Image (cartoon, rainbow, N blue to C red; front, side, top):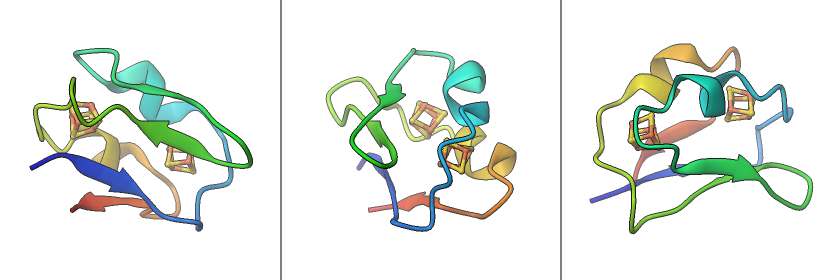
Length: 56
Ligand code: SF4
Ligand code: SF4
């Protein structure tokens, strides 16, 4: 199961810098997680100031 980023995302970019497998990139209006790469480590959720990432 991969993590997903909700519409709460404010596109700060902090999660992308902390993802160990480089699965997060800037999308249209919010950041997005590549489900093929995500190993569900939870680092993005721990880093996010608005708790946008969560386990799908
Ligand atoms: Fe990257 Fe871990 Fe977040 Fe998946 S859960 S997107 S591997 S930081
Ligand atoms: Fe969006 Fe949170 Fe990632 Fe910042 S840390 S880009 S608010 S999901």
